[in-house]
Image 1: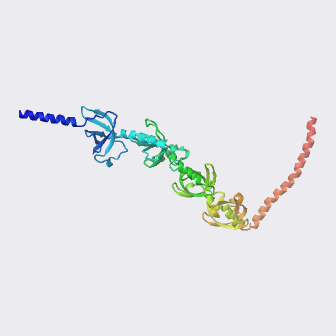
Image 2: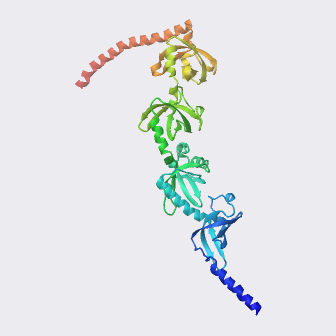
Image 3: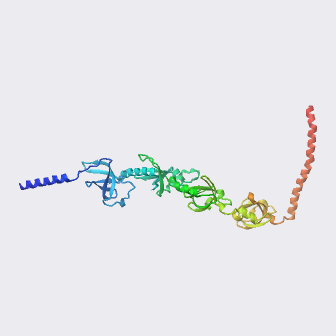
Length: 409
């Protein structure tokens, strides 16, 4: 009897405790619930749900926006219920899908507010950069990159474009959300839009004649791309240096800061120059020299018919084969060498037209024999012109006589 009474007391106590205990709540599939971290392992997280169950976030549902090393025991996390098996007391949870819902909600907020956010591209294709946030892939098109990141590739070489974009993967980008849809399948970010306000202020601050330090963003055969506070413009090869420019890479490197002068400003069209930061060397030459003066300068290059000489200010000019010597010149290298300091006489000078005539042979008088030969060559030419005149008249008379005969026939 005592044992039976004791058993009845235990049952009554159990029933009382059961009535006082909280109701067991079974989460439904696709519900987003808040749980507490019980244990973090390499391939999963054990989560306490409602202090009633300890269920599992499996590896493929962890996502990539939460650093597992930063999670501590009893940290609160939001998870989605993927499926449940009440009979087996098993609940599979997804941290990734809960974060996707949260991310989409935030993107709508950023879209309407125009807030600038930071993202890191995880991969690239030839059309742009992809940002993977917990399995949702969002896009920064090439057309929405700022000038400093835009792939400037000659002949639109697709392999080079892709190689450039791959070099941007995992870098931080400040962007704005310019398109978002309900399913999260078409989210577009713009780096250009993120700097639009800064760009507008920079454009307003510029005026013709300003000298500004710009950053070289890209180099092509005939153009130097430079950026300044979100603005990008071009410096043509003709505005790089007063001399002849064959290789722009000798004057600047990508990422290098260069001083550029604003020489024209029309609405959003900016004309820039590097060479005009220095005085026009043709003006310098005009102040120093005149026809008849002798200049001493190094020979920079020799071709079959020309010797190139480097004048003040980087101007490269040439001396024709016929102005090397009074005698017959078979090879210019017999008279001058590259790098040799050579004296030349100015025989013609038109600085406004950027032309100068130079001669080595004019520094010395022609030998008498050469002078006689040159005068002999000129005499027959004059005589021939005199002799040909009567011949022309005689022919004219014949034609006048012949004409009536033809008519008579």
